[in-house]
Image 1: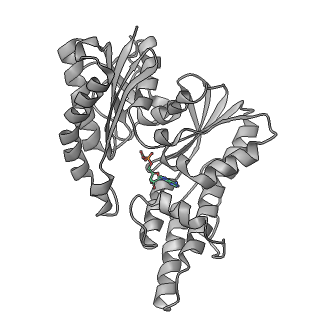
Image 2: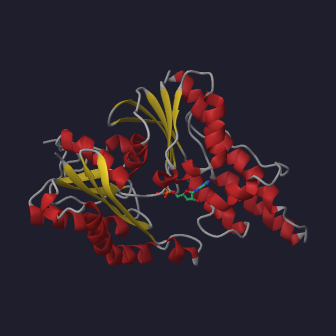
Image 3: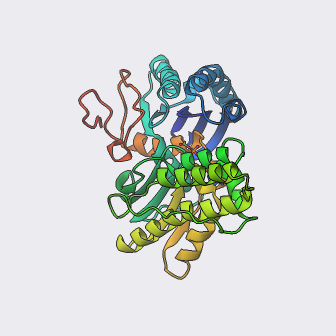
Length: 346
Ligand code: KG4
């Protein structure tokens, strides 16, 4: 029997989960959204401090829910990156302390691998698969030919799609995080504002969001200067059509080119209702399977970190206690975390 305690603190959610042979025994998430809402975005320094305050509370609650004690845990897993450096440090220090105290392995987990493996809570991964990773900090198209085998075939060359949603939401007067309000208002509007569809900036599957973001901001400001009303629902719809359209186009082309058996969605923006329905619609009748993560898995949590940790525990991918965080860790370098930069698979 293997029991894993996983910690997630890469952005504005402090989370602790405990699994026993893959079964989720506890999944505690303390979100800081109400604090950051006032600033219209995550304030990194405040986020780190709140993680420090919340981590032991989450830990205690997770142990209570699982009816286990720290002595029962076989390995301590933690998100090592990507994310906000100060936030990552809090989770890593907690995990390292526990691993040292209880003399158990420390498992470093890539945050986006976590979002991808969250899908295992609802279905079995079938390879080769295409994973559409869309979050507040990342936008990537990833091909997986096997477990823990990630090839990035395309990514954003500037802003992440979620970041773009949040900036556009701010100019439209919606609260942070702006993805859900835009999604809701877009349903009430029509695509009446002409917005440019960015061309592939580099590689075939790359995307770009900064031009789209600037176009919406400029359009809103010029309407305000002319004292013309901004039709918020129509603007949300016009923006969403372009922002999500880009992802769906690239995803469908890649799914066919790479002959995938399955498409999976991952990350905060995978909660988007238009993205979910468009991908589903386009895959109908193609024979390609689709997993859409449950909504609770689209936001940050530690259950998804535990899922990856199970795979790493089997392979004995453990880190030394000198481990540091990596705010820019690439998913295709998930096994590189030693001083030498070489995989440290023991
Ligand atoms: O995965 P996540 O927590 O970010 C990172 O860890 O980087 O995702 C948060 C992002 C935010 O930008 C939020 O606005 C966006 O996901 N989001 C959405 C929706 N719900 C959340 N974007 C579009 N439509 C939604 N329904």
